[in-house]
Image (cartoon, rainbow, N blue to C red; front, side, top):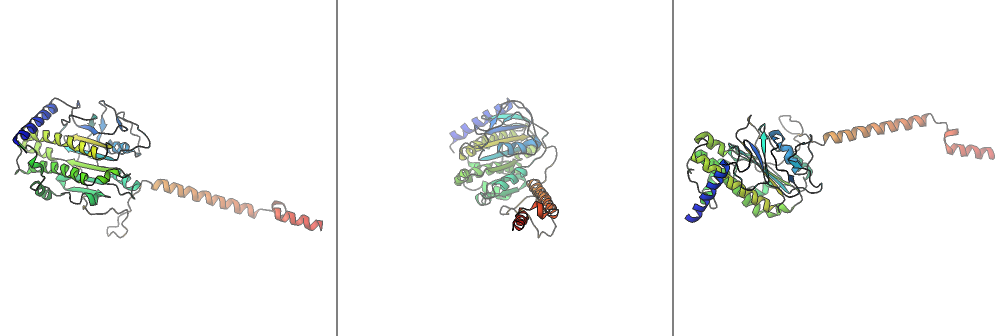
Length: 362
């Protein structure tokens, strides 16, 4: 990149950070920002708060799925019944209350920022579209946490997962270090490298999606969930008033804006991209990580730990159908048997009645 381009990039990032300080989104504190959304997913602009524990239900509703409890939230209006977005991308940014995102659909205050996962949404996508093998990717680079289903195992097989792999990726061709003005950020500090590693993962995801454009043309919706905590580490190490934190905030806002536009365009303007910014979660979140090539198992009868079968949300429906059908059939058999036992062949059966009349006539 030429010096002139670098100076222009620095100016853009400086303006972005200034807009962040002057409240570009209009929401103070933790927030949920809808970065991209198709026209048939109607988000209403307003200051309606949304609870952190309702984020998975909100994602499910935007994808056209039903939820257990009614989501009575005025920020999202009901859309067409037979249209659903092709993908939903949720990015959780820890360590910052809001980001300077110049172009967004709407932004809402986030209440009760408790840890949450999209496991229930991923289970719904996999159960409804198992034959189409949709892409399900849940990734947290800082914790080396990865969960993949369907075509994601093949598409993102080369995606760096561990911090060692991501740092090695930073030194290869196509690294974000060659295109980003680091300013006060250092290539040798651990916290700075963690933040740059997360930026590199966002870049690699869009690069892999551009290489596999056929994913956006199938009939199954895709689900992406990313958690970034690099800003939280920078805030803890340098403080929020440090130049490292300010530069990283401006860089991440610019990168996320481009990331949302790229994903939205790759899916033919039929993807929902949400950004959740939270200063800190109220409780720690622990999850079991999975290997990149691990396949999903519905049940594991040979498990040495005597684990139960995986619960299916359709179990209650199937159980009631089978139960009441068996009861109805049992009552029908009892009624038929009772009537046959108490039947008088001479009066109740037309066969014996015709026979008796013929005998009398003869």
